Length: 93
Image 1 (spheres, rainbow, N blue to C red):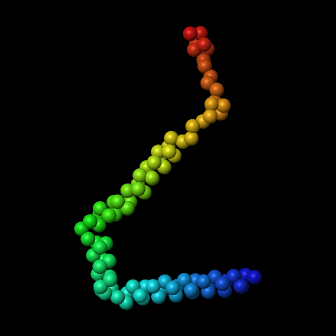
Image 2 (cartoon, rainbow, N blue to C red):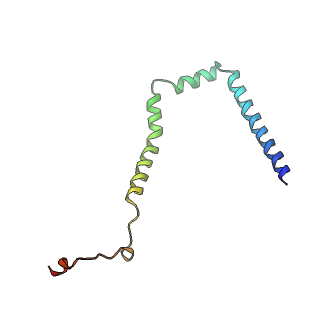
Image 3 (cartoon, rainbow, N blue to C red):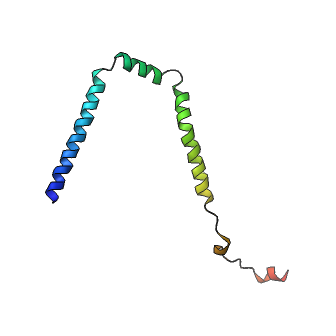
């Protein structure tokens, strides 16, 4: 059975390499065509930093909220709280 899995693994790796290689050839085939120029201009225009900030801002807000909730932790139920031990001096007052 081990030999069959090795062949399947090699076949799938070869298929992935073939697909990725063909995609890279297609992208390199037309680096300066009209569609590539339009996409490049829209991505790297003057508002690139603004667009990037607007995309990343919700993720940043969610990260901050999750970090705060993690830091606060879950509240302990009253039955699970440790009993408060008072010293003898406190009980006299």
